[in-house]
Length: 346
Ligand SMILES: [Fe+2]
Image (tube, rainbow, N blue to C red; front, top):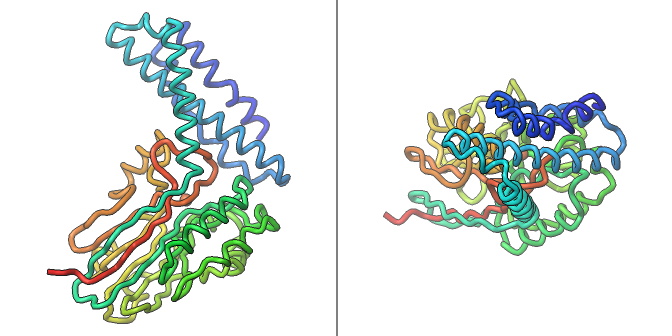
């Protein structure tokens, strides 16, 4: 860990300086490399306070790093256009600083302010109505405060849901990091008519899965793994995350002829498309969260955020209510999703 910090902490500044001094595009290009290696070793740190501090410092540092990457790319662009002198002027540096401050302010606002996003999904011959709340990617960790969890519960209860669906990544990695913080006592205050059911995400698999599931059950979230339940003439299929290599096939889970809703952490739709599914709810992408992660998700997933109708199936991908390691969102906003399911009027 120490090696990583010593190596990476001064790197963007050194490379940025080298770029300005050397006029080399190659050095500028190097700037884009190597910003994610910090993430891999963070869980090895056992001290709660130290881990929290390092996470905050590194996350903010990486934000600066990425912003400098963007500014460098802009500088290269200006150079190519023949306006290279501009990038060495105090005005350019000042504008870069203002851009950085505005970005970090906006990114943090998007991270802490939770909005409510509403959808209406119409299903043919569904002669009743259901009010769902879909909560994905809460990412409980030592970076989150009790008031954040209280706000989620207050907003969810304010929507008076018939049923609350949890889309995975509720725990960021290890329940041990959040033990004793009281998140479980607050989350169990969520209220709904038919219950609170959820799937696992890839992040629950980072720590001890058994302990993480026990923690979620303590929050009174019923975790269903490759199981389905029927609520008000709809069959809800809760798929285990792909991190479980032996998860069941979709066709081996459902059991009724009711219209079907899938809750699957990652927004992949191929299997659901081959079955007769009305709606899939997913999270995982955090709506792209920030540049350049958003580009990776755009290449990998057909829907990174929002609602889309793919043939006859509706999909909703939530940007999630929380985020893990990175305490900013410059490409998406934290959200709680409300979905009204009702009959389609032809
Ligand atoms: Fe997530």
